[in-house]
Length: 68
Image 1 (cartoon, rainbow, N blue to C red):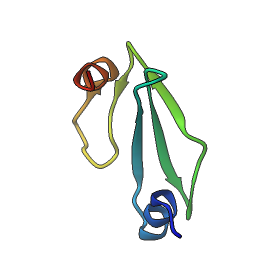
Image 2: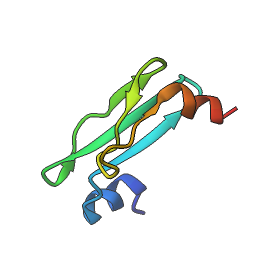
Image 3: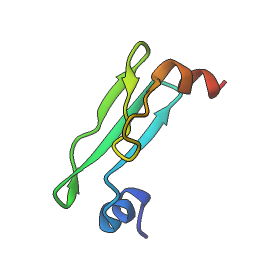
Image 4: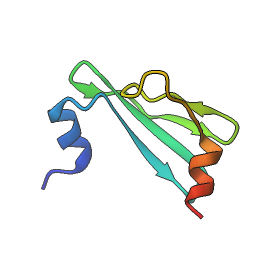
């Protein structure tokens, strides 16, 4: 069985985010060569700037608040 991380990696998806509502953080996985580097945690008070959306930014608080 292939998990999403392996599939995204194989397809060359530059970045993906995991929203962790339990620990109130977002884990950002970025492709480094042909593998994802260790996830970078973002927490309340920080701002995300996704690689795929140049010029776009959103606060972690806004994403986590939308989750309930």
